[in-house]
Image (tube, rainbow, N blue to C red; front, side, top):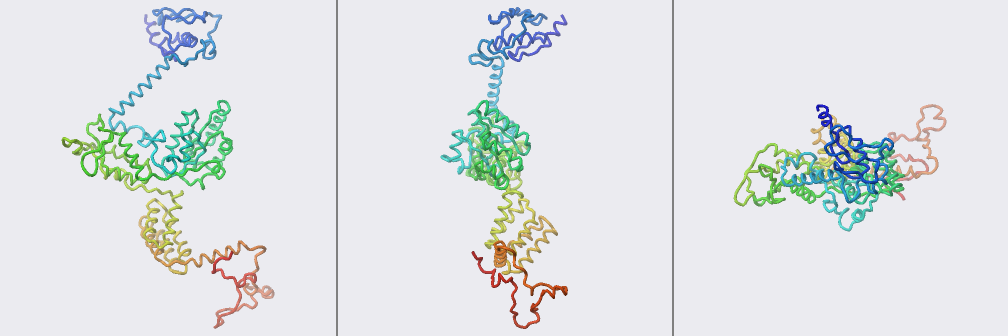
Length: 574
């Protein structure tokens, strides 16, 4: 009796019908399940008549008592319909018209997931909604209809939108600042392509290796050859791949084995191979406008069930019609706080959504309530998120600046042109953009030394002294104290008179040397030094007039014979 109980206790689940059976009977039971082609076989039911080699199933009482569930003749080994589909009555396990036990289990799991999702949307607390994935990832749209911003590229009747809606995806390079929607657009393309039967593979250049890319391409070749199925390969941060790694894509993008979609925050002209760039269409995504950010933040507020308090009165405009049902207190946010967040995130949706999530979680953690006039009958206690809470979460305005990227060169160019145009306000602004974004002050100081001679020159010779002094001051004391030194120098240069006479003349000299044909003309003999007797005998220095020895101007040629009379300070000759 004890042995029987131990055997019953050691149950194994059938992977086909999900029934619990003794471990000693699982092999024979699995043979019958697979041959019958039924998802679940009731005890006492007999197998189809096509299989006379199988004995009739034992009565229900015999299971679990140590007797075999069915007898198989020794001369006829079991044949599994998994490998001989023709013996299973012409239908596979997943054939339409019936659902296996595994199928019912999957459907029940989906129903359970759907029910839990509905419960989360209706009764889950705000704290539970903020757990798990970041808010920016959770609210990522799945369709073009939910995509906010980038109207110039993805607006109605645009070429790219028409191609995406017709499922004709070309090879693309998505170039834009962080948080502008590059990965979201790829996510939308992935959802659309999967519905259309196209494979969508995602790799990140920060972690993927060349072998990973080759594996994906090999799979894409097999899919195309065997099933005529297209493959879209999305490479996030594609600029992290070096030139040789990018060359891996070239022949396969050229012949259509894969459709490449790359996302980058760096200028593709500098970071992507020219050959690969010529095979892709570059889509420039701009940072999101304040209006687009407000729409994204309002969508996030709706999903969380947070009420928005208007500025004109203390009554709320509910985004969902009710606050979080399972929260003890309603959670509200000032409309001004959302507007401030939309401005401070600088067009970065990820920064805005994560800042909103951080502010809400911080206020929920504190749990401090405030009397709110959110009902017509009177006030009620609730958790209020103000503009100060938003600023505290972000600490400071989000400044987009990349010391090694495109924005680095954009800002220094803007500073240079502002000083050249004598706009002292714009010059200070661009200087602050660079320094507050983390730029090396010595880099700015070096550029100012160059500017002193290139754009001011002889109009104010003291400008060069000012620039060198500013560079030395930055070396002595560093940031943040040296910022005012650079500011003084920048304002001095913006107000100084400008002259490019020397800069242009030297450019004319370089152009003359580049265009010269044949050997360069020799140095005239009278201009050569003669430190030895042999050189003097050869005529070196003969006829040279030492200017300080003469009271009147000396008539003497200093250019080679071929260039006599050339004036490099005049306009460059064509």
